[in-house]
Length: 451
Ligand code: PHE
Image (cartoon, helix red, strand yellow):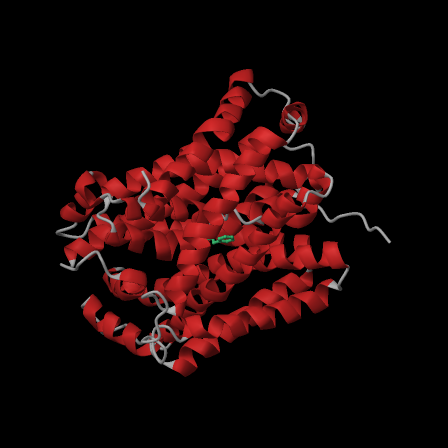
């Protein structure tokens, strides 16, 4: 019994939902701490190059695959390759990456929810130094009950939205929240850069010192580009599969990539000028925004309310990303095995939450348990963001650039674009065939030490 596949309610609906997937903890929590651990401006520059030359063309490719095949990642490759096992395996790898990412991403999403409650309780009001917030963060993140509790609660929220269905749940949520979050970040940026002593922080973000750039840092920047754009695992592909053929993929994708990058850059300006003004070290790891932000609000009139609002919006930004992760897994199981959507959402949400518990304990009870020198949390993040996503992205680029009949690629790309200048499609094909795959390969080989 074939049902008409659901579609986004409007043109802007797709852009907002995909931007909702892209914009999340990756921009506001992860990007600043990677910048802080890898020396500032030079890392940002490498990141921007990765976004432009690798991320943007692969994002177009991924959405194109989804819109053409109108299926989940595995089904899309089946349709486009007449059931080639290798390519379907690549789709499956994406579903697996989604599973792993959701398991640890959800832990941080839980923290942001926990911080809403801390903020409401006025726990940061009297703090004048981020160190005090840092102590509180260490204490909370080490608490098994707090971490696991919010982790489970957040997963329940995610499952609830997926339960409500694609267009209703995801689209409605994304429409209102993203602009609000954006505004609040701008307010914090203005506050940060006008603090006395903010100069060195601004310089840190603008003046590149390339001596900090190692092969590790370049791989981190590439992985972050994929992670932040929700790329390389079929999230954009799945969202693209609900997209109408009347839409212009290149402009829609450019909007998504542009917004995501803008928000990450702003998050840097929100954190570092204030951090330098308060005389702190940039390399603080995953705790960074939880140490910095609560205190920064004390410098703003109405800080108590804005802090609550900020953590609510952060949790919601995370929610629009977690639902996209769960949606990939759900659409795969629903399309391929005809399971009931509601049942899949609940069961998979539960399984992923369980799988994420070791990551939730990685900052406390299980912080000493290491595999290859990494906690569960770090290991999951490394495998997913720095290996699975770039490999997935590389394969998507190779597929679209070399294996999909080039006639159909062009026709599909041009469907919905009345006035696309020829050089743009030409440039995209050049990037997707040569530049993006070669860059990803070079970065991998560098990291392994072969180049
Ligand atoms: N892009 C999201 C963020 O930056 C995370 C994400 C990664 C979501 C992969 C979906 C797929 O927060």
